[in-house]
Amino acid sequence: MDATQTVNETSENRQDVLAKERKRVLSRNPGNSRKSKFLSGVQALEMFVEVTDE
Image (cartoon, rainbow, N blue to C red; front, side, top):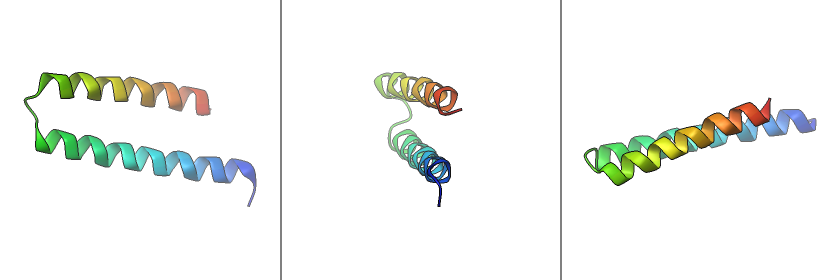
């Protein structure tokens, strides 16, 4: 297994975990504005990660 394959798999796993966490937080407390601000921060981080991974 080469290094890029490992990085890609790790990236996919991280996206998976973040998506699950986002769903969990949203389903637990959809009306909390602090949560939604946190989530938009997470989404911005994800976009940054996707750009820097390429």
